[in-house]
Image: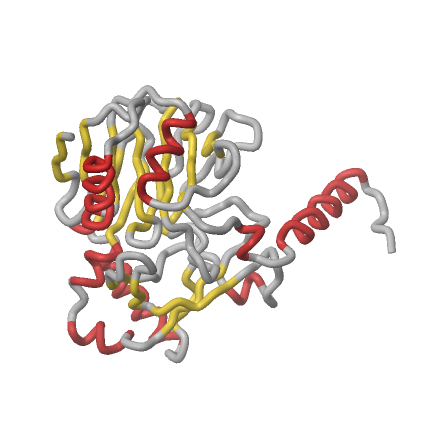
Length: 292
């Protein structure tokens, strides 16, 4: 297994044919690299969905179900268009996803990048004054599960009272990774509403200072995709986002999630609330009255 560093503080490139199972020593080396580097790139792969699941399973629990597609051309493709601010999937619940694995099957010219930020590295570089200001504090993270957009920050005031479609959860600003124990910054551009216990102005100023560290050029990596790239990252240790992909140009990634529980487990009532919302929208489109 040939390995080289990908970015200054995180990421590694591995030259390995993922069509073949790894032996015990290789699996151990892969797990150690994942903890140390948080993001693994396997270029020039030609693999099946089953191969992809097997690789993720070496590192943690695989969320059951068939493949998901981050795509602007496949039916029911996830986040098909638009920019995504930096975020961590499901940080607005008690159990954020542990990892995400994308395999590129269609890529626009120029690579249509995904951007990554090292939350562990940012916590390590916190100035003493800023560290003291956030020590022991929690940040409230919110989301709208009925809206696939991600190019603007979600705010509690806009979402209104909590529902199964607008979950929220407060994590420590400086949290410990649930498996590695590493300290990291949990606040992000898309989902963090505020730091609890600080006034509105101080909360915003503090978040801006934290984000300046998180998203500094030396703490980020932009991956320009090529067909056959497989990227697997720790969703808690590393945040991700993207600029808007080129419109009307196919962009498709096959996704496997590393997690113990799905959104249906993490957000009670979500399935029922989503079904009710869709029924109401269909009635509105047909201009039918809502039944009592």
